[in-house]
Amino acid sequence: MSPFSRRKFMKGGAVTAVGLAGLAAADRIARRHGLIPPDGGTLYGPGETLTYAAQRMIGSHALAREFPRGMISKMPFMNEVAPHTDEFKRHQTAGFRDWRVVVDGMVEHPLSLSIADLQALAKRSQITEVVCEEGWSYVAEWMGTPLSAVLQEAGTLPQVRYIVYYAMEKDGWDSMDMADALHPQTFLTWGMNDGDLPVGFGGPLRMRLPRQLGYKSVKYVMRLTATDSMKKFGQGLGCAAAEGGYAWYAGI
Amino acid sequence: MVRVTHWLTVVAFLALAITGYLIVLSHPRFYWGETGNVNMKPLFSFHVPSSRDTVPTGYGYVLPDENGWSRYLHFEAAWLLVLTGIVYGVAGFWSGHFRRDLLPRHGERSWQNWWQALRGVRHRDDGTVAYNIVQRTVYLGVIFVLFPAVIWTGLALSPGFNAAFPFFVDVLGGRQSARTLHFFISDVLVVFLIVHVVMIALAGFWSRTLAMITGRAGSAKEVNG
Image: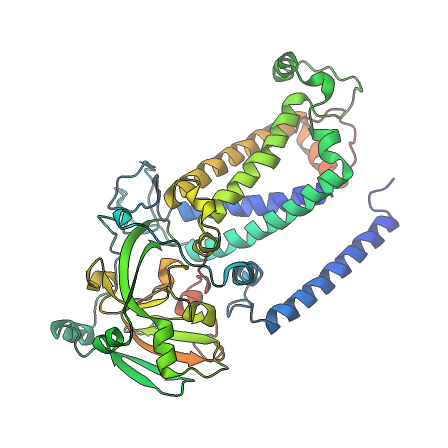
């Protein structure tokens, strides 16, 4: 029998049609439940969407692994950072007393908080691993204020879907969905291993999302913006990293 | 179904292998345990240039960064591999493909048979295209041991997945152990691919490849791939 028979052709066509209809239905359901990431429309969007949707469906509230104190890395790796601006150096000389993180966008009460204000709001600690997309990792204790406490203070509006966060440098910005923003381990981090957060590790203030790769944990955070859509930010891909070719969702 | 899934797997595997090695170039050092970085002693490292200037390689230059698209493509191809694998697995059990074509046949399960197959002594009662015992064992190992293991160790590298299923990484002895194992298992699969293609070349590359595309055994009476 010829492998290209009409019967096989019809069967293949039917399978393809069912598959396409299934895909269209899946796409509609994913959109309704907010399971399409901001960079879901790119060449690698299907893989990115499957990963993001799967992880949100199976473990939206799962906690990153925490480690015993004895596993804290003796020699954590200080990733290189861009040279600091004069403005940053002025803050550094002043001991970061005037460092503020601004909370704006779709919130009832826009805020401007110093490190001391954050510490007065809430203090938590966790011993979690920093995992770089390159392959290396280390474990440290992180002290900070849960982002959820800050968002509660600011009163995010019900339609908010993403929190955009900005570093001091011009191109340092990223965003996270509300599952991560309200996650108990997502910290605005100001302390590390029983001391202030060193500048080399992102001090005075670093966003930490232990369920995602290190590059989502943006250093030198100065501003948070609550929004219902990422379309208006940059190229609409959700973060500066995605504009540089890296995935917005870094839970993998 | 076997043929369609075979070629989808080829596409996915080639994409995974190429991007996997490109990702390794950003940190060509391997560790054992939970953590590992350039401040720690590696289990072993490769004397190759790196795509990051933070890695001490001894080379005076840094390769271009290919991790962005490599990682995107690696995970997209991983989904293709997993979904194809599920279809192949279900269809393979359903149709009897595993039992009929891959499980070593009753009369063949002896060391003597193994030895003969390895030495190239072929005796086939039906005289045509069935796989010998070595082929059957290797294919079963690749399908039911190596591919599941490479997917397992790969998932154990995902911080989001590990949060939901910490068992996956803990049982391997930590994140860096999982990464090292993922690398080794991938290497074994690449060696399998090379041997597989060499065997096909020995059996007649185009006739065998065409047979895998069209499903016709063609003029060749033996399957060595």
